[in-house]
Amino acid sequence: MPVRAADKTPAPARPRFVRQLPEQRRLALIAATIECLKRYGHEGLSIRTISRQAGVSVGLINHHFPNKDELIAAAYRHFNGELIAGFQTAVERAPDTPRGRLHGFLVAMFSLPNLDQDVLAVWVVFWGMYRHSRLIQRVQRDTYQGHVQLIRGLIAAVLREERPLARVDLRLAAIGLNALMDGLWLEYCLEPGTFKPAEAVALCEGWVENLGRDD
Amino acid sequence: MPVRAADKTPAPARPRFVRQLPEQRRLALIAATIECLKRYGHEGLSIRTISRQAGVSVGLINHHFPNKDELIAAAYRHFNGELIAGFQTAVERAPDTPRGRLHGFLVAMFSLPNLDQDVLAVWVVFWGMYRHSRLIQRVQRDTYQGHVQLIRGLIAAVLREERPLARVDLRLAAIGLNALMDGLWLEYCLEPGTFKPAEAVALCEGWVENLGRDD
DNA sequence: AACCTTGTTGAACGATCGTACAACAAGGAG
DNA sequence: CTCCTTGTTGTACGATCGTTCAACAAGGTT
Image (cartoon, rainbow over all chains, first blue to last red; front, side, top):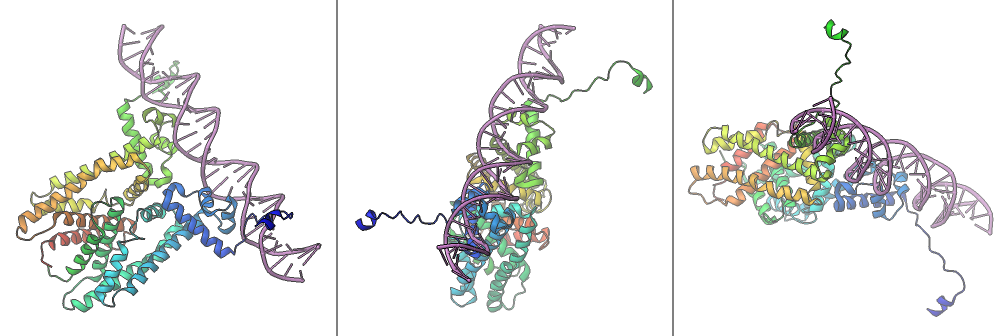
């Protein structure tokens, strides 16, 4: 607009930064941390890389988090929360039968956004910290039970309805299914060419299928 | 000995270092690298930490390896080789039946020295490098096939002998057993309290047991 | 319009990183 | 014993790391 262009008043020099509520900024920093982990793995975990990703100065991180480890732990907690929430909505949207819910869960497990090399990169970094970081251990302990209970519930529902006669060690069944899923997921992320996601779902369902059989 | 103590000749001043053949020194540096990975994880992967572990100066590493990445890749190759060799001797020492060999393999998988948090720490670091390091990718490609073929051979022998009638997708069976093993191994290393190694072996054998059944 | 709170910036610090390189010395050859 | 090869040392360098902190300024309050 010519009028604006001819205006003598200097451009309002839009603010060099925008203040945000601490909660919003914390979330943005957490999101930037996870994004850096996905892109660069362990090497992306530097204050400077994260702050650049968030479009923010280096000093701001230590204003919202006491130190780097606390930021990472917060990112881990957020990451776990999003994951479990995604699985739960997948289960809720599935057909309301035991098999339907299990199938919905497995499909969510073996499709985007979960079945992704980027997601593996994030997990790998957190696994590497597990032994030496008390913060990470704490988050793991807070989160892991929910995951196991979800799987155990799905299996229990299938067994209760379809194989009331067979004696099944529910604990071992859940451990086994969990391991089979994690192993397939890990192998696919490391080498996506060896099998298809649908085959992974079928393998897991076959496992549950064979649970009640006598050996 | 007083004679020695009274001797006027200065102590022979034992050598400040001992020269070694390049091959020996390379092996020692590789061993030190793996030891550092086991103890300190990703943070142990510094030239100074490794050289201290090997009882050697910082400069020596770059005399035997062009750079740090090549040392790590060499360590990865060595680590993989030792692992597969251990499994193979376990299989050879087992009773000479298909089931016996599979059992021997599984027991080796779920016992020391393989079933160890330290070993997981090593794997985690290598997995984290897989995406961004061509050297690691190359070692992985060179090594992985041998592992898969070993497992496939064990399953095929069991099936050939005991279930010649059933139609089994050998490829999917090997993928599934591999995933189940890796998942159980991973879970045990992360949280050793949830089940016993013998239960893991039993779960894997149960998987093979159910392979030939009609669904 | 002046003021105040506080989210935000960016330079600075000491530590540690991987690598390079000149000097050293162990140990066999002559 | 002297010489020579080369495995070995340790300092030095530039880069990057996490953290600190004084100064700045955005944006609501008075």
